[in-house]
Length: 123
Image (cartoon, rainbow, N blue to C red):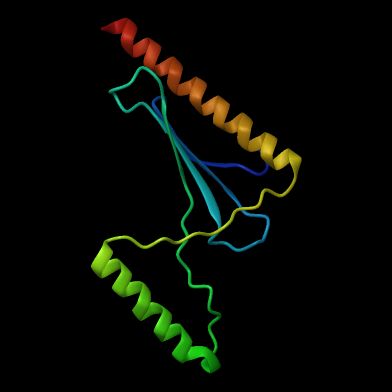
């Protein structure tokens, strides 16, 4: 599973982790994918994760009060509701980046499905 835009970070028979970076070039924009056999289902579990949570207010001394206010409001939301909605975006570079991601996902799913079949045959 070696694609130019995909990096596999963990590759076992029942557990595959790979990630790819965003077109924007920000090193914190990483789309991670975990494909695993959770032991409870006859099919692989696929988890996509995308760390986000940076505040949209740019870090300058001029807007320090605005940043502090936003952090206080968000902290109160988290404290009193237990939830904080944060979103971000991920941009694929081009069509080949999407195809690489799709084929890596398909390969990982097939690999874990094979592991599940072998495991079930032994039982």
